[in-house]
Image (tube, rainbow, N blue to C red; front, side, top):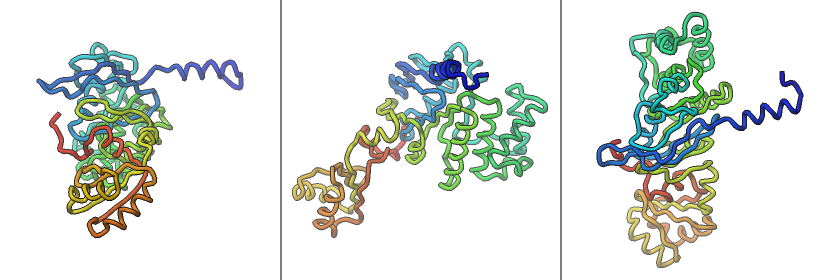
Length: 329
C-alpha cells in the first residue's frame, strides 16, 4: 500500500510520468501508386490523451487511421503503437486496442446483446466475466433497456454507442475512431462526446479520432491538422488559435471580388477571397468592422467578427476549407 508515504508516492508518480507514448510515428509515408496519401509524418501521442486528427475528406486521416489500427502497412517510416511494432506485433497490438469504424459494423439481424457477446468471444471473454462487462457498459451508455432490440431498429446515435461498447469490451488501452460523429445530429453528437470524456476519466483510455468537425476537434486535448497527407499543424486547440493573434472578420456579399478591391482602396487592408466570402485578419476587429459597415453596408449581406477558430487555423495553414472537394484516399 502506498498510503501517505511521500517516498512511495513520488516513486509511483515517477512511473506514471515516465509511461511511454501511446503512439510514436517517424517519417511515415504511405503511397497509393503515384499518389502519396501520408507524407513524411512525425507524431507523438501521450497515454491518456484525447487526440484529434483534423482535416478535409481525402486529407490523409483515414489512411493514417488504418495504419495505426494495424489494418494497413505503411510504405516506409516507423510506427510504434503502445510501444509495439505493427509490422511484427500486430496480433499483440490488436488485443490491446479498440477500433470504431466510420460506419457501424453490427449484424443488423442480431440483438444488441448478441452482437456484444459475439464481439466478446472474439477477445476470449466468456461466462460471468463477459456478462458483467456487457451489463456495466450498457448501463454507462444508457442502453440497458435496449439490449434485446435488434440492431436494425436502432437510431444512428444508438448504433454508434453500441459500436463504442464493442470497442471497449476487452478494456483496451487505446481506442481509435474514424469520424465518430458522422451522421449524428448535434444533440446526439454532444451526448456521444460526454460518453467519450467519461470513458477517458473512468477507464483511463487513450482516445484518437479523425474528424472534419471543428467543434469536435475543439474538445480534444491536442489536434493534428492534416492536409494532402502532410501534418501542417499540431498542438492544443487554444494554442493553435492564439498563434493567429488577431480577430477575424468574415464578409458575405454577391460580388466579393469587386468588394475586395474597393475595401483595399478605401480602407488600406487586403481581404482574401475564401470559400465565397471575404476574410480579414486584423487587430481591433470591431473597430474595422464598424468602418466597413459604414462604408459598404449596401453591398454586404452579412459581416461578423470573432476570435480565431480552428477553421481559421486550417485556412491559415492550407488556404483551403474543411469542406473542400475530397480526394479519393
